[in-house]
Length: 534
Image (cartoon, rainbow, N blue to C red; front, side, top):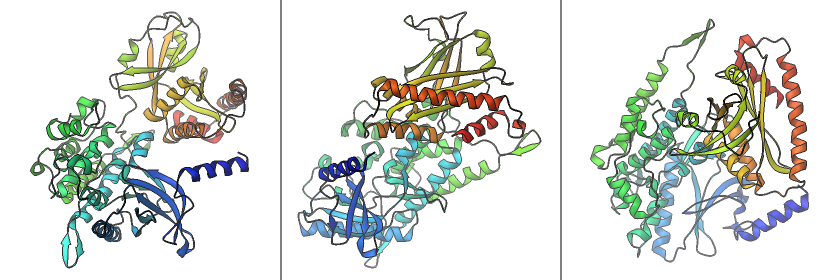
């Protein structure tokens, strides 16, 4: 992009946000908006007193209209700062202040990574990953619940707003991932502003709030956070919230949290395999009455540790004289609805009976699923079933927002290779929806129709996308909103088709070249081949 165009975009962004470019408290230079939510906006800033050290500044969506509110704000920020020093799993609060407009803000350590909501959107969790994240969340909450010292007294701290957006996975290349809990004390401060009714003053995320929190009880204890953690764990395990509502009103969510019995994991998705002890823990955390939940984080940590030990004790699997650890279990599997539903589909009457393929968004009770419908000779389909395959996405986003979706099928001996491809124009509504659904769902089904028997679906295969591929598609969607196309769609297709033909030639040449794929297995060899090409 030309420098003057970048400068114009930066200028327009700054004009839309009054804080970008400002110096708060003669110290924090606001550089860019990096997040926003119901409580306020988060900015990347530089601490000029410390040589431009990068920090995060959260500016709240309210004014401090009196001294009492200012004192309460300072108290809650002090609590958050104390917790950040006690636990590595709680974000460190460095300072706080008030803007010229009497708007409160606080300064935090700057974190690089993603929050849990972003991660769940693009990447299924494994059992081990789930346990690691949950244990770190529990350690942070345990530290807060044990309390801090204030004027000689110990005060337990309840978060009140545990939700995916407030769980941040700090990605430090030099160290292991660290989970950080955000926004301690802020929910309590905002909720307890004077002169507000219950629904006016309720601060928290309705889908994750405990029944007693929604009832406005002043003396919430640690078991309120345990309920919110239960909702969060359910969503991490199954990929869906335990309560599916058609309305987002306060009343609807209160009815669900107070009276609706959460479904079992099998009812939501019978294909997900979750240890019974873990299922029981989550359901207990979701108990309506506080006395029926685990009473503290120590109890939850003990159960998680026991589950982790059981996983570690799984026997090794012998394969070709090699000992391999069991593959990690995907908690959100690639087949989240029955493939029998696909087998009931019929070839569209408006499509010719020929060796063609096209994408189709399939609407099911479990949600919208991306599929690709392909018609091939019956004998050819039989060779590809349960065999090796690869998926790739070719793009030239700097020229035009278009994705070439490529699926490659092989038989065992590489005597037959079939390339299925389709152009997804992200400027087109259909192409955009297919791209978005692929990125969001993380898998797709191919419905095979036989040329000899073209009416009904002959076979179904499920293809899983990698986390990097899902991120690639998400990035394409994001870039498409910010850039102007420099060429026509037909020109973009021509360029991508040239890249596609180069790819086919390269792969076909390598497939016919002697190799040592036996060492890592056929599928592993194919994966390695594509990794080397891109």
